[in-house]
Length: 121
Picture 1 (spheres, rainbow, N blue to C red):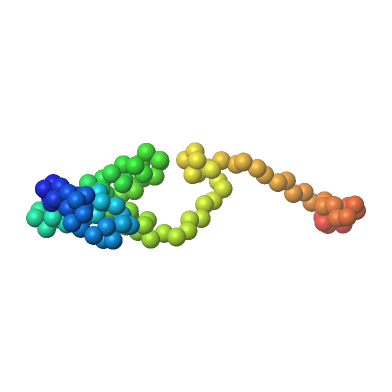
Picture 2 (cartoon, one colour; picture 1 turned 60 degrees about the horizontal axis):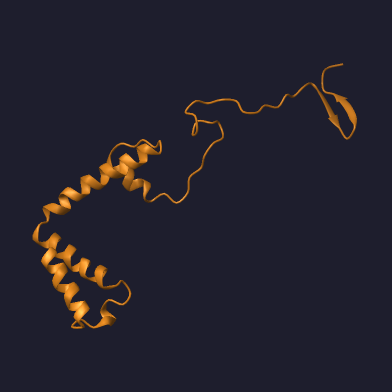
């Protein structure tokens, strides 16, 4: 795989490969794509090892931000989420619900400067 990378990188630098082939991604990325293809074809177990490693890294990074998830299925479903709705109870920031504000209603209400008694007469 390293040899494939070096050969393609050398061919790009010497002008054997037309620059139009790699002008969007550059010589290094173009050569790296061939090296990765060679690695996957010659050793498919590398792909089998990379998948669990990626899941482990993804769950580890999420845990650092306080997001706990179990397994790769959760990560796969999370990649398809397009919107999230949060409540305002404080459970996202503190992990414990708390009252942040309250409004007291009484049996007497004021409407445009007049007091109306809603109780019984």
